Amino acid sequence: MVTKMVRRWLAVLIVLVVGLGLAACTQDGRTTNDESIQNADNSPSGGGNDATSGQASDRSNGGSGNHAGSIGTDAQSEASDEQLPELQLARMFPERTWQVPVGLVAAPGDAGALYVIEKQGRIQRISPDGSGSELFLDIEDRVVEGYMEEGLLGLAFHPDYQKNGYIYVNYTTEKHTVIARYQADLKAGVAVDAATEVVLLTYEQPYNNHNGGDLHFGPDGMLYIASGDGGGSGDPRGNGQNLRSWLGKILRIDVDRTEDGRAYAIPEDNPFYDRIDGTKREIYAYGLRNPWRISFDSETGELWAADVGQDAIEEINLIVSGGNYGWNIKEGTKCYKRSNCADDSLIDPVFEYDHSLGQSITGGYVYRGSRIPALVGRYVYADFVSGKVWALKLDAEGKPHNVLLIESGLGITSFGTDDAGELYVTTIDGAIYQLVPADHQ
Image 1 (cartoon, rainbow, N blue to C red):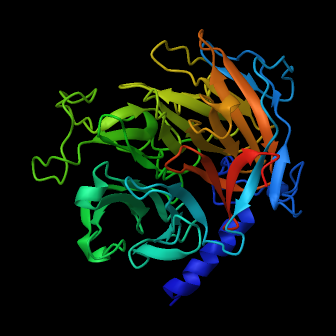
Image 2: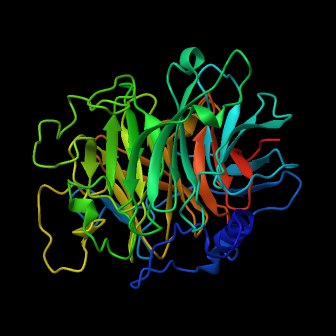
């Protein structure tokens, strides 16, 4: 029998070889093995500042669909409407690495601390002064990460965390996704007892990829959960368009109330709340393939989602209540395996790019920090395979302006923000970087 420890290290090895499984699937459902993680245009700098940097340039071709802009090999450079400074990713905590970090979260009331999500089932707390890292939660005994996209994938702190100590996580077991609550004993210390688990929601995963995994509290106090289509190539079970499935969706639940035997309630303003036909009333939006990182703009409250593509297109969506984002009728703005996909009810991405620029989008955040004023209001995201980091801004007419910030050469697994709104990235090799001006020392 293969022990859990051996299985975990085999899983980590697979992750390092093929890149966390975030890359787009081939036609037979396998994950693309792309060596450009190591062979990107610019390798991470090993110099004195331990950073990788690039000069910003603005590229957009004005769009390939009614609502989306796109970039690719034929994109034409256009004059930047605002000159961005040269930026870099500065290595933080260079003496330490984490085990396949897939998220970085700040906790309400814990000023300066950062919480690192380790895929195998642990959360580490980095002290405010950065001098140490301590174990915050360990649920490795119940998390299955045997495949590249399985594991502990998301963490959200309750807005009243300093009063109730509640945290919420998204993890996979052998066949299911689990959304669970844990409680920290804030008087005894910051560590969370795994025995405090309360399972809110579980749903079956037919395959072991496309698990989504992110979750965030919105400005309305509701918990939003990103779920993938359940895996396989091309959504073979049609989950993205199936309102009787939790898969391929953004879910929205009220964790401050319970009803009908559930450890949560369904908000009455959810778009399908009144359905009695088997529709999952937790659904907020649908038609997604594998939303790898969602985030709320801390100023506007807009919900951004980066959806990993299949064969050709990576996309960015602004999520609205009841919205249908097209998968698997469309991949981005293009018809998917059909000649006609005209349907005005489908919402096109606000931006997309083709696989000449990258093959697996990693969603980020709208920047609201103070260190880089010219970046304020732009959605910063990356591609896991190519290592490129971009910033996207929509003008008053909704036209996208996309700026290439850095060609990092890094396998960027996720973004995070601190309590000041500054941006960080986590990488497949266990490092954490902060986005800073190139003259940062």
